[in-house]
Image (cartoon, rainbow, N blue to C red):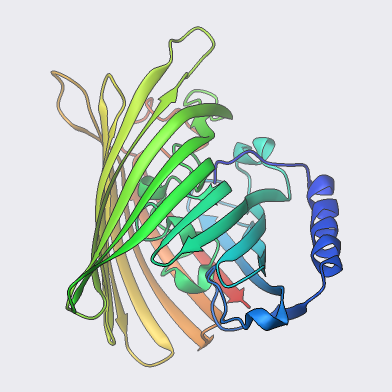
Length: 382
């Protein structure tokens, strides 16, 4: 069973690292560009005769959140403004086929104990990318190609809600945004109207798990992680279909043997002029049971600036010889106002049933508590 679960560096080290990276890049010479066009880590057009080009991207989402009782992922009844996500991305294009990318992040989760294992500044990505025509390889700490949102979790201006599905992407635990290893990609041309993007990734990452009695979080090592991701571009403009599989070895405690977990998923992404529809389903083989999770999202553009969103997500646990058990059911409705593509105000309300993500009760001690929570957030990017 997102999110970020990579290992974190201390805040002071992270700040010093940002300064060091900037100095090193500047010392290489060449031109420096402040990127405005897109929040993704894509290579700008480059004239090789001009040498090194450096671009910067930044993302910030600041929220105020409040619940009607139970504490949900750090959101309390008293409310909290200590709820945000931010990132600074630095990209150095050495040539049209070679690039070096670094991304630092900052996250706050209100009153959640998750803050105990996360530092104020974290090293999200640091990798070298080499392109070979329609193929590429990334080596280092690389974002994992997984689902619709895993590679843009920090970019609030692209997300319909404050965060993507917490059950599917595991905002607080049970998933990862990055892998320490390599990602190999290739784009296949399947005629004039079809295309297939394929990614293969391998390495290690940090798996954050939650103690459901104390609600404390612990980071474990996910080793020998291997996965594949496929995305099919259809003749219908804006319609894409994805699927993927992943396996990794995990030792849940010092006394427990290392076991191999497996993850399978399917995705549907439709982004059209007046509306968007997204749906994803994931099956996590936990060796002794299966975690089944999925969500469906519908967004309608009322005007060029105003969008309404609705989403429902669920999490089930299926064990042998036992009936499927619902652990979480979250319904959300929201409205977004885009002052411009790089500044978006969001208001959202959630109706939640279940104790899996609550942090003030034992998750398996209370059956089906109902919690309402809401967030008001402002997202910006450059």
